[in-house]
Length: 416
Ligand SMILES: Cc1ncc(COP(=O)(O)O)c(C=O)c1O
Image 1 (cartoon, rainbow, N blue to C red):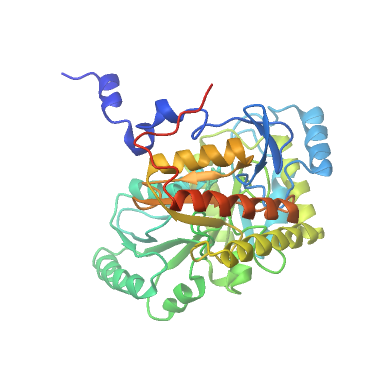
Image 2 (cartoon, rainbow, N blue to C red):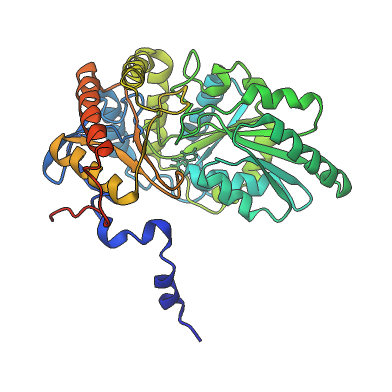
């Protein structure tokens, strides 16, 4: 019989197969120095476009002070235990109330992590008779939540409302037969393409179909909408999002997440969400730090305004230069090029070593074979000179890519 450990090595997977060549450079790079647009990579300063610190709060002095004071007052352990048992506090309640009023939902429940929270929320919200209908480009946490579902699931083509209708027809027949209900899941902002979920069009289907809508707005919270309350606010349909999720890992520059919904749903989740009931509560410095960040987002629109100045300059600059940035309508800025995985690594090496530009490189299986995606995340901490430097560098590397300068059989070798 085979040994489990031996078997693992036979199935390293599409990313893991590059582990030996990529580790600590293309995968698991270590950025050092103060968090922000200029960080050191392997000792050299680079202009960094890979942090999801949209509003530039991660290293904001007021935020740092609040975090430090909370850590000094409470330590990192407090409170101990799950909230249901011994880990609840007035500050946890306050953060939930502040979030609820900001996103204009009756109630909110905190989650320790976004990924686990989504997985667990899907698990809690549906039973085996229910049917899930979800967008094909959903984040891994949705896909994995759907995989745990014991009932039927149907996937609809990304943002394709006609296909969603087809899937809803199938889902309705099945749900009616087995006395179940339907949950539709999509995202506010898709983190790879930067497209927005067609929330209004999906919501319009509620006239003809019976379903509840779950929206993961990890990239939309803080960046989208007049006040930054997210994609529901941007598309003026927050009331019709039945379950609104976002994480603290992006605009809030922290860790943790939350779900906003009706008092009944939140009460149900408090007593049924296994990722919270069976896990330690969010530590107090995270909780107080999130209260501080939210207050800054609420009271100072300048962070979001500065972000959008950079977003517009970067995206229009790239488009004017003929780059394909896909269909983004949000800060997420993909640059789509044609090439192989080895070419992608040689180009990235050139960008990092010779142009001092650090951005994420995304290849198959996240994008189709033959496509290289350089993913840029503009933030409020970038300045226009950063955009200009990047546009110049991108123009040069694209010329080299098109001229075949990065052609290779193997991944690029970096010297250690
Ligand atoms: C769309 C989306 N949902 C959920 C998550 C997971 O959130 P967290 O990092 O808090 O686990 C992420 C990534 O952070 C994300 O991009």
